[in-house]
Image 1 (spheres, rainbow, N blue to C red):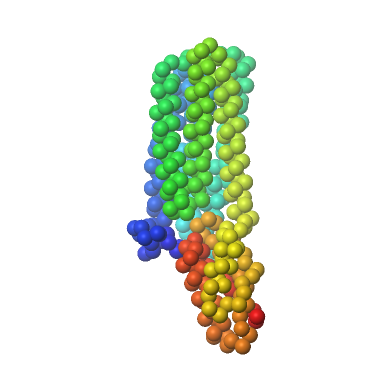
Image 2 (cartoon, one colour):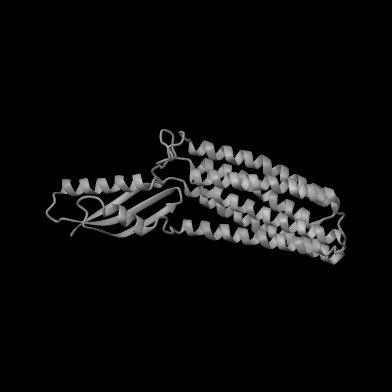
Length: 299
């Protein structure tokens, strides 16, 4: 793949094996997410706090998505074959949708616990340990979100970027839970299930957003600005005009097809040479483009 496969460079950086790099990121974040989730869930149950426990389950699906990501990346890394001439990269998108669906199931579980807490009216046991735990886990989440986002942009990984967005919701949710802990300590125990309900809604919102964006990729949403491609192509000598530009694929693997107007007096060999130069210039200007189909028309 241009810019990201062994033997190529990305922005002058070191040689990268995309699949191995993404796996490394997912394994590191899996360990951190599992630790954060376990700490929140165990403490939440011991303290009787729906908000902290719900936040822990929210974090749990960060870890689940890492495991799903490892499976997806393995499948997506397979090269094109006779039955899949465009490769297997969209497996990553399919599994990203799976993460979004899991988040919706998580929302259901959280809201069920919220209802139970409202019905029973139990007050959680909150102390300084609660605040210390939430601050520590939030610091870990901030590191994970920033790390995944940077690696996702570098490796052009749709999954890593979606997963970093999921982790960002953890940070906002944890802040909300900490606010609820303040109200609980001031004598307002109902702040706990209310915070849990807010957590559930955040989880649902993030899940729906991930599903919607991934579905757009699956139905071949345009991946590159047409005017950007047009400006590149029309600087190539011999091109009179460029139109009917279409792009599809994933963020890191874009396919382009377009029509060129050239001098009708050119030979087939000369027109082919222009088409080849157009293809090479697009790939140099947009490393995410891996294939360009050019249709030649007489001007």
